[in-house]
Image (cartoon, rainbow over all chains, first blue to last red; front, side, top):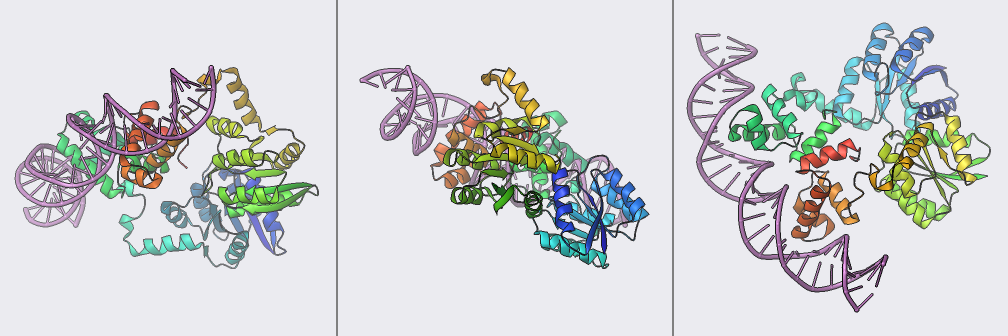
Length: 212
Length: 212
DNA sequence: CTTGCTCTAGGGGTTTTCCCCCATTTTTAA
DNA sequence: TTAAAAATGGGGGAAAACCCCTAGAGCAAG
């Protein structure tokens, strides 16, 4: 019998998961949690074999929760269940100690398979997450993470001015540099973040919540 | 017996909903759909009494799907189930013809209540959505906070392509119109929304959560 | 039947963006 | 201290964006 704790702030989704998992005779849902903090508390108290957890949660986000769980309850296996497809999320969660990563658009069978795999001490990554990890492991650690981190401080300044809709001339005036220099920085930013134009850059910023 | 169609691109959530609703003896889930287009098709084919639909979906987003459903199958009631709390969404969906609006962090009981209410021809709005609508109805329609109410349908198409980072040439090709026409539409969009360039337009879209 | 709006398309222009290339100085790190 | 990276500035050019303008066709409301 596999004991499971489910942590997700969306009540309907959470109860749907309980309903899904409870249908399997080998799985027993011990408890639910609607935020990261209570997830950690309930896990320490009930010691479930598997913890199914979402990334975005109030109180304590999934990332921090997974870190604490991994430190304080290493025998419990953490399955991240999320709709975030971003590479950075996968990497961060695995580093935090997750044993599995599943997207919410997976089939429910896959969820049950994942829970069972983790209970047996295996890992379980969705096709997507696995490919991200495979790609990442080929690159040196320094280049991991958010490409935004690769920007120099000056480039970051320019980045923020671009996503405010400023033109190169505005940027040059604002930073008290020549238009040509601003233009060069602009080009570097687009290049490093692999976007084709300012519009895509703003999308990028929105995706990583960098829009102030 | 209440027949229900469920449309959500996240498979696990969708199957969770099926599991939840199927537990109720009065409800029968006719079918599921993973995108807006197939949701409309399956609805026209199976004629469910209630359609539970998410806003963000591939192919045809929830907003457009609800519009089409309301036009082509007015007897079916649409329940929007989403995690988007933004005022604009509530208003847009209600205008598009939704009879109910529920956040995903509601309790599952509330979902069942909502489905039953809609099946009886009533409406069902979460506490939050109801308060948004109440506030809105106090203001004259002209001052409603409708981001792109002044855009024509063609301009809206162009709007969405711009915020995807498409160039004017791309847009012209995509809509099968001349570059000059696309350029004119682009200019109109920037003018009507009072932004200076594409970057600001994407910011605008992000502000109103129109980046799907 | 006229008026107004939308969609279409173009002329012609300026400005900005994006893309190479290059060099110098300053700062940082090995 | 020496090499690498960052910041500065520029030349030049193609493409795109932005901003005027006109104008016909189609369509719906008054």
